[in-house]
Image (cartoon, rainbow, N blue to C red; front, side, top):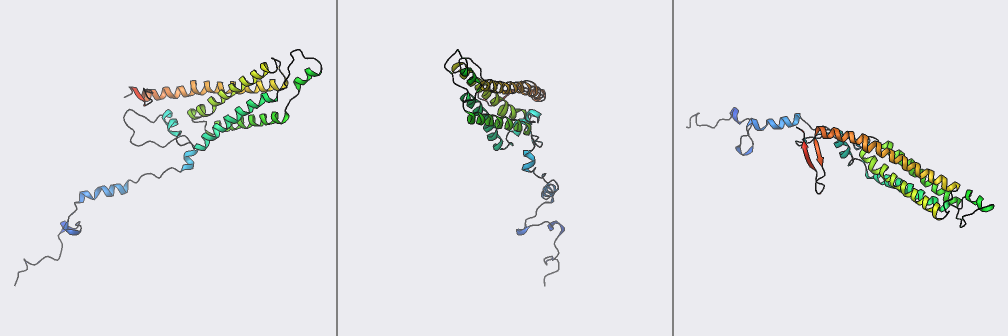
Length: 251
């Protein structure tokens, strides 16, 4: 008769309390990371609507050495969060502004004589095509109001408003000035009418406003932010193929 010492024990030993199937024992140290992961859960994601209403991004995890989250970096990264719809709207508003400027010369009275008198002189104050004149003003108004709204909508992102609104607005306004002046001195022989004067005033005014805003944002506000970025990170250059090269790294 077998002794009690040779019988298998029905009570498991304390060391086998963390055993797994097939008789493999898992050390207690392997269970600790899972408990730590459960305690440190990732923060909830920011809603898309909240991201679209601000250019301030959440802190970037695991930033490489030599890089810092500066205001300039935040503006550049926020360009990806701005919906593509706003880029299309900016292109549309600046284009329709140019369309209005191009339509203005079509409303000027065409005269072939340089010496004008009597009834012919009065034609300079008459719009040759009133519907086209109204359409030109409507296009100019829609473009101007749309550009102002986009400027207010993304006023904290200096990079976007300069590249998408001010620079295209300046170039289109200069194209409108050239179109109006070429019509005045080519068709009207340098004689200004009421419509030509109003057209040249509007195109020059928009060009001056856009030019002043470019000087303010590009050469004052944005330059100061770049200087702040260079002090914290270092001076960066575009490189030979635009890959970006950090010249002076701040430590």
